[in-house]
Image 1 (tube, rainbow, N blue to C red):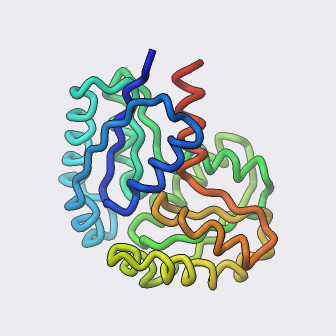
Image 2: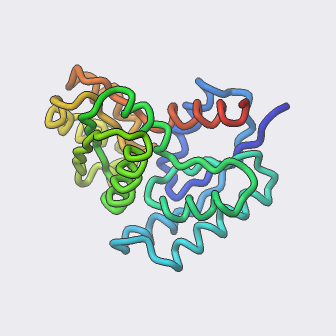
Length: 218
């Protein structure tokens, strides 16, 4: 039976990476794309996720469920508390964009590096990582670098320069056991980063698609 997967996008630059991941890991899935890029615009104005923006995101997710989704995958990493609330309210799997990548990173070692490009997401992601590490009884540490200006370049269509900016910061994390590319939109920099460091590099989309497929199949 074909599974209908709703993808919740808060920025257009996350769409292509997750589509590529589905093509490679789960091509049989029927994808439904729901985009509200005002969520990212408004999230960038807030230091912490506000109650009103959280409510907007949860309603967005309920709309996705009403479309007949068998599961929901969120592709933006800046809405962690809202995703958790949505998951509590819906009877279908709701997957955060980074939880599967976090699991892979903890399996790879204890010194974890992360390259991020959207600063408002970092506080939420670091808290989620710490919570997940505690759940796994891991004393892993996380070192995050925010690559300024990269996401603006990507939004303007300059993927090459975005990838280069991200890759140029990678050597600062060369002493880590593994490096995570924080956002779905950052995953396009994988090859450029791998050319700069010998450290294993993880991306969120492929890990998320594989985890969701296993959850549905299981």
